[in-house]
Amino acid sequence: MYKIYLSPSTQDKSFGVGEYGTEEYRMNMVADVVERILVGSGDFVVYRNRRGMNKDEIIKESNILKVDIHIAIHSNYGGDKGPECFPKINCERSNGVAKEIYKSLMSVYYDKEADNGITYNNKIVEMMNVNSPAVLVEVGYHDNIKDVEWISNSIYVIGEAIANGIIEGMKLKVC
Image (cartoon, rainbow, N blue to C red; front, top):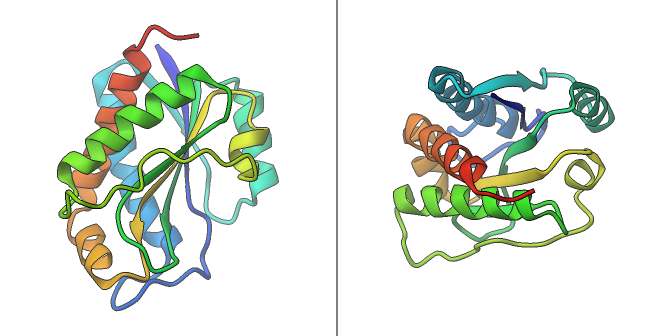
């Protein structure tokens, strides 16, 4: 049985366009789906952050729990479109899970030509400071109206894609 820490965005001041609301609100909806699917699989014990926690508290809790993988779930901004995954650098398990999540998300994303892919960034505090393998998932852009519509209307599909990517990625034979 795998222990996983889900960390949906706690950014309650990060508003998307249109009727999106906050990043925290939408990503918690996605995390609810991911959690139900992972627990339902019988292969995962799921822990998760709570609204109002800051990054230091999230990192500390994840480290205390000694999870097998830490998954942060966010939506992005900056005028682009599409999913993107940021695995913990120099971690084979993180890279494998990130690839599976990205592949799964792109299988349900509306624009198959979007290709943000896997990005390596050693400045993402949450990814670099948890002891476990880790992946930050950006499901799409909350300042792009088409992505906002897709996210808002596809919460279950997105959550299912992330959960399936985690399940497949954790099956990979890596350290």
